[in-house]
Image 1 (cartoon, protein in one colour):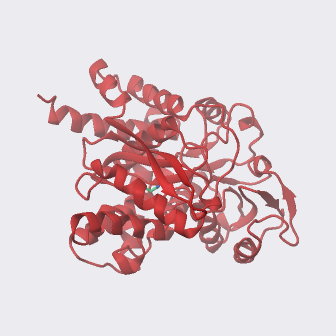
Image 2 (cartoon, helix red, strand yellow):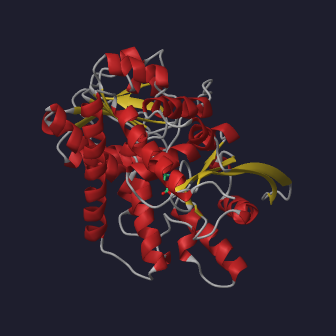
Length: 421
Ligand code: GLU
């Protein structure tokens, strides 16, 4: 995923805890259970050396956090970004716990990150950083314990190096230790597109519910990495018109529609979407505010706050990113009658196909893309409809409904397992 380099003054961990508290309150969750679920189970900070191409040695800082292991091994990506912090990784780990519970896959939540701008590293440096970081977090990871995956600025090649590093240490090949691998190394068909595909399945359901005709709908997308660019392609296949997109360098707008395939090619050639012929350059923030029916935030946290939520024109917001909307902005959307597909539901397609990949790896199996997409659709549509039913029954915002569903499932598992010792 391409990201936006803006200093985020809002602490994502405070946001994550605030969202949890709201759900715990509505569920009348027992005080002790609240204390347990409110904190991460494990937080590992590592500082590790990497030999740079010029012969110098640099020390990088990285994290792996396991928020909850109640329903299964920890699951969640590893991001490489200059703004990574422990609090960000904690928030992302907690969101993974709820995400896996919303779609009902047998995982807890984890996340990792390294403070680095990978665009400034050579391939050799990137590989060395990846192998050493993975070695440092090996005390936590393993196919039965904690299974990383791609996230912001990480990809199949990086997963391949991680899998190889772990396998070298074990003395045999362990494909199930990470997901999002290339197909030739035990990756799953459809994993690369899965986050965006899950988002689009949710949008199709939401549009039907709201009476939005997709062939007449205009879409704006913030972020043009794995989630954003593939969502642009898939929503175009649903006959919607993409009118604005952005990446970390800025955005472009054409009210009559952008040719998505050509924008993707343009970005490959120029390293930015800006300057695309026939479109007007706009800022990354302006993409959120253009005239459109559907807004897909697909970049980083805290992009929609109390400052700009009132300027969002879209009536449907589909969070392909993790944590793009603050609780204050949620309040504004709810009062304005906007329909939210929250991150823990909307972008759960990625981890769902990661789960399929892990199952295939453990069984030495390989499923067709058709099988993967059908299973993914079944899970996403079910989770969407379950969340919508709670939201309608309780007359609550979709994010709160998704949290009720998720927290209830995790709390039940925790309750049944009981307290050790
Ligand atoms: N990084 C993705 C997410 O935030 C995928 C995680 C996974 O596949 O484990 O959901």
